[in-house]
Image 1 (cartoon, rainbow, N blue to C red):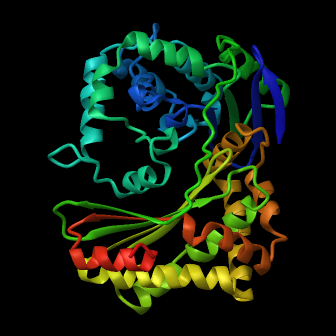
Image 2 (image 1 turned 135 degrees about the horizontal axis):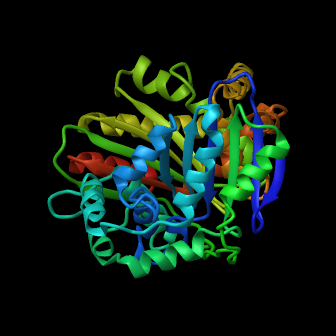
Length: 423
């Protein structure tokens, strides 16, 4: 791994993978709902969209898209809860021009056709709302139920009210605050130029990045002391079930063990979650688990969709699995398989520069840049006892929130309340 500081102090990290036939450049920054106020919720996501609408040199969205694709490239962007990324993938021969273009896009947006983009984002936002404007996205409902009015509970896309308020002045202020060397990093992976030339290319491409000041966000200090249930009734053929738990943050000593816990629960169709709810009981078609770690806290959630009459059994099985992992821990065979699959994923990243650049970028934002191989080494020595301790922390009954979205019957709601100990 190559580490350096470019331009006005922008941190840069690179992983050379000369056997590949593409190169990837990622610009990552601290941004998202975590750094927003209630009245501007969604502005980070909207700003990400606006970065696709042109620069002074390329004054339209189409002109910018043509420039990207003329290099054989593709530009992808995302906004998460506490960070965002813009990633440009290109043939190695186009790397220098692609870097110049990405630097231009992040430094000099012109915010053209705001109302056109507002219409696009409005359609995206409405996908998560019903005809009355209520939030029916189960992940958003669960997040809001767990984090309440803290920014970690804000919807990434914002609300119809906040979306309508975004103008060029607000966008420029948000851009000036976040798109700086103090809040961003640049990473590269794939077939890259030699180190000295790479440094020169990146320094020139991102020379316009201002230094800025580190962004701050309010810490989440209101850990739940009792379980909770959120029910949103809406027409649908199934009920979306979410079991959300407050987990450790990325700086907690159990962070690595929680990652391994996730792999024990859901890493393929032979792990506990799928085997129980799908293969053995036939209650669901698709199930999943996820874990997002923020600075001081994390969100561990389990997702399933099922017919209303199956919801009580789904919850019973999920709670049984959680208790079993907290009380007895995973089996040696589960740990062995999870560690092997983690190693294989790290090895696969040697052929997927997008994964390598993303891991470098997101970890560098926390001050501890690491490659996929280094990420695996953090968990390689963990044991079943470590995962058991993590499960006890994550699945603490006092920190569990259940969200049910869809045609939820009173019987299913009552059973959920009983299982949570609310009755």
